Amino acid sequence: MKPEVIVIGAGFAGSVMAERYARDGGKRVLVLEKRAHIGGNMYDYIDENGVRRHQYGPHILHTNSREVIDYLSQFTDWYPYQHRVLGLINGVVAPIPFNLTSIERSFPKEKADRLKQLLIDAYGMEKKVPILQLRQHPNPELNELAEYIYEHVFLYYTMKQWGQTPEEIDPAVTGRVPVHISWDDRYFQDTYQMMPLHGFTGIFENMLKHEKIEVRLNTDAKSCLKVDLEHHRILFEGEEFTGPVIFTGAIDDLLDYPLGELPYRSLEFEIQTHPDTYQQAATVNYPTPAAQHPFTRITEYKLLMPASEQPQATTIAIELPMAYHHDAPRGNIPYYPIAREDCRRQYEAYCELIRPISNLLLLGRLAEYKYYNMDAIIAKALQCYNSGKLR
Ligand code: FAD
Ligand code: UDP
Image: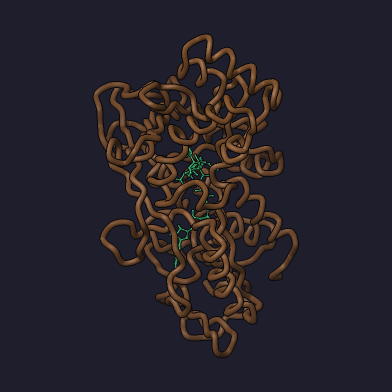
């Protein structure tokens, strides 16, 4: 097949574009994927315990976008799922995000009652307050509460996850998990929360199953495609390719690091099997010092499955954050871009390098160097396609 569009990466960014160009645009699309499977970081499969394991960490669909749900519903049926997270907070197991129940579990009754009332008076019920904002509150008792939450929920977890304190990273990162003045103990409050009946991989299989889409697995784009920065063009199998090229991987890697390595955080998952249910919630966070628990969270994958399908035996994943380096034996997968001004500037310098190449589009969490959730990247890909930018 001679492609009219080349998509690099079969995660959501790449698969939405491939699906749209083929099904809506009638174009022949070639998808190059360096891994042995489609789905990018969303890839999941049924493991030896009968558990649907998410190979690259737990993924839960939550969104306020009807457009995203309508789009995905073409490729899957759903089951309802609301994610709940517990945390080991100063020796006590309590809901995260830290909420009114967490206060009751953390303090003696009289003190807890006073703190709850102070919070409600200061902000109102159902409000979400980022921890860095709560720390600014002038009331001494609320300030003391903020320091408690800061230390026992955010500080050590963030140090483990990012190697930096909450003040050193973009406030939007800890703002993802604000203190919640509520009895609602769900991790997310979005309108739509559900999981695909045949896993996320099932969605990708259906998206990419099209006569005009060819997927080449185990194929690093660098083996057949070259970005010619000097002549502002793309070469595919030695010839100039003038159709749209959508790249969803790490741009520093594609170009072979002419401006140095962009920093990312990486993860490693220690997988364990247990004969029976392991913990009380699908995810339990360990916002404890690294010396006590070197990991950030444990996810028990069967608890993400419909109750009727959960097997007896269980698979857990213990999540260990670490620095990233592309050719290190460990930590060689770039999971998280780093939300910091200097990193952003380095990324933008890379964008400048490729700006004159008008048929190359960077799209996705790595390619745009942005901490996207899946719904945001699906919405962005749909918007890019609909805008007709590269057509
Ligand atoms: P990816 O899924 O990373 O896909 C990029 C693909 O490009 C990969 O398959 C890669 O192999 C391929 N590729 C890269 N370079 C090349 C190359 N040179 N040649 C060929 N192929 C290449 N979002 C949520 O909404 N809910 C969650 O609960 C959630 N949990 C998360 C948990 C973790 C631990 C992490 C890390 C992320 C989580 N996310 C979650 C975010 C979600 O994973 C991303 O938003 C989404 O997967 C991004 O899709 P993408 O296509 O941009 O990138
Ligand atoms: N966070 C924390 N303690 C927690 C949960 C989250 O300090 O118990 C902070 C931490 O900095 C983390 C960020 O909030 O990186 C975002 O958390 P989220 O659960 O959204 O992270 P993700 O699932 O994207 O890894």
